[in-house]
Length: 146
Image (cartoon, rainbow, N blue to C red):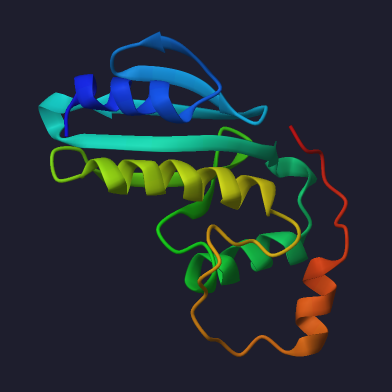
């Protein structure tokens, strides 16, 4: 994978796109995603802002950590600069086209499923989340959504 191939992929999977090679901002169903690459260091990331991290209560933060283990799969919830993000980070050259498309999908779904299922796909790894705890997570949390 390289920046030229990423540019082509992002243009095919997004509703709109702007930016330059190596730094794109694009939208899928009005959800913003950003991709940044560094070909010299073989790194890339796809990120999507979810919420002001200062508005998250302890229960939501814990739910994100549990999701990072069970339901977020190849993406993770992370905080940087006061923002909660859904994040995919990977070496650039080793990625296939299908992996990039899957990563975009997972970043998008982790964003829109925040506060409910916290899932990036329909696949989850089993865990010890009780029915009571799952119901609490599914309740509408109070936070400032972007």
